[in-house]
Length: 232
Image 1: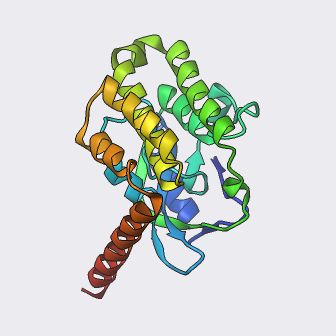
Image 2: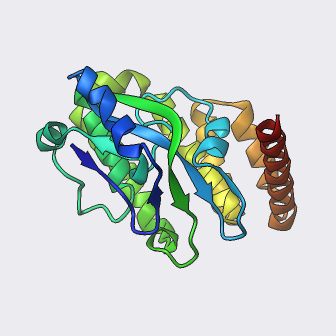
């Protein structure tokens, strides 16, 4: 088995045992992933991928779950040998490309329990974001999958592309590039109209300061709700 751990992340007790267990019990399982606590520089925390999961409108025909993060993944070594390693030609999204390739040949099991810590660290490698290269890599991953397994993905091509454009609309909106956000949200709406994309497009027409204030208020409400849940 092979487990992953990014340099500034942490595993919690039980991470390896619980990550390996489903593969011991079921040979067709090629990989597992657990959830992670995401820790922000100000000390706030949430579950990695949970906020984005709530924005996802489309079925996950191509992309793995929003909760997948490298430090929560464990793979069967034979699965890696079969599908190949991380693609070094991709500067970003190489891990998502790997999960997709594993999922085409094996089952992937989600462990709905946070067993690792993802530290949102300013200045870390993941923060050195090259938007144009990241965008290019993302769509390269999609094109390769459509070419590699046309029978699997072609019937869902429209949904896959609408989902991809929605992803980039959200990403650019959060990062304050409203012009690019509007471009991708309109692309998503042109393929598969959704309330989510329409609402985000309306938000992308507002000044970023207003959008940022709303996102911060939503985050604070979620944190308070989580604290009440833990207290109960």
